Image 1: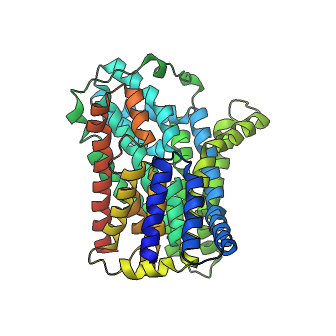
Image 2: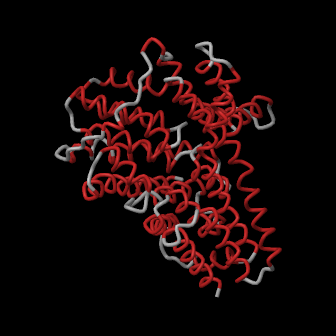
Image 3: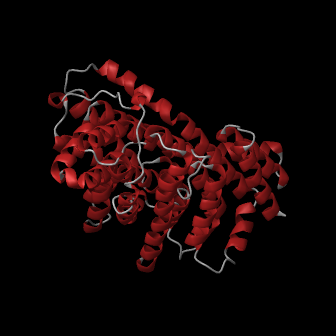
Length: 438
C-alpha cells in the first residue's frame, strides 16, 4: 500500500504541474497532504510534519541562497562578469574562444544562478560571434554547458545545496567532488561537442543583442573580479583542506571550520564583493541595498519549491513511507547511485524542472543515504546529473536557449537537448568512478 501511495503521489505531482499548470510549490503541498492523509496521519499531524519539513529545509537555504543571489547581483552589476570574460578571451585568443567562454561560464556560474548567468553572458557570446565570424553555437554552447553543470552539481546553487542539507552531506566535500566531476563533464559537453554543430546557423534576434556593455575603464580589475567570483569556493575548499592539519581541539581548527561553513563563507564573500566592487565607484550604500533586496525576488519561488519538497520529505518520514521505501529500494540489485540518477531523470523528462526533479528524487531515495556504504556527497551529484538529462519542450531552459539563439525546435533538440543529456550521462560516469575510490 505505501508504494502505491508514493506512485500515486508522484503521478499526481506530474499531472498537477504539467496538465493542470499549477505552481510547483502549491502542487507539492497538495501532494504532501494527500500522502499524509492516505497513510493514516490526521490532517493536523500532516500539517505539523509539513511545517517542520519546510522549516528545517529553509533554515539553511534562506541564508545560503539569499547571500548567493546578492553576490551574483554584485558580480553582474559591477562588471566583474564582463571583465572575467574579456580577460579569458584575450588570454585564450580567437582560435580557442570557445574554451575561453567555457571557463568564463564556469567561473561566473559558481556564484550566479543559471538564468542570471545566461542573460549576463549571452550578449558577450553574440558580440564575439559577430566579430570573429565563428558559428554562434560553436562558441556559445561551451559556456552554457558550464552554467548548466554548476547549476546542477555545485553548492551554493539551490538543488545541490538543499540535497546536501537533506542528506547530511559535507557541503565543502560536496563542492570539491562536484568540481572534480564538473571539469570532465564540461569538457565533453562543451568544447568537444560544439564543433559538431558548426553547420547549424543561429541568428539571434535583434531584441537580444542590445545589452549595454560597461566601458573598460569602469570595469574592476581581473584579479579582483576573479577573487570575488571564486571566494565561496576558495573559502570552503581551503577550510576543508586546512582543517586536516590542525588538532580538533585547537582554536585554529575551530576558526578554519567556521570560515568554511557555507553560511559564513557566503557572507564573507558577499561583504568582500560589496566593499571592493559595489562601493568602489562612489555608489551609495542605500541604493546598493535596494538593488540587493530586489535580487532576492529571483529566488523567492525557488525557495518555496524546495520548501515544498522538504515538506513532502518530512511527511514521508513521519508516516513511515521512507522506512518502507528504504526496504524496497535496498532490494535493488544495482548501484544506489544509478537508481537515484534514473529516478531523477524520469521525473526530469516528465516535469521539465531540474530543481523539482532533483528534490522529488531526493525525497524518494532519502532512506538509501542511511546506508554507510553510500556517500551522501556522491548521491547529491548523482541526482544532480540525472536532473539535467533530456531537457525538451517542457523545460524553461529549452525555450530560453531556442529563443535567444533563434533556432527551430528540431535544431534545439539536436543541440541543447543533446548537450544536457551528455552532461547527465558523463556526470553519472564521473560519480561512479569517484565511488570506486571513496
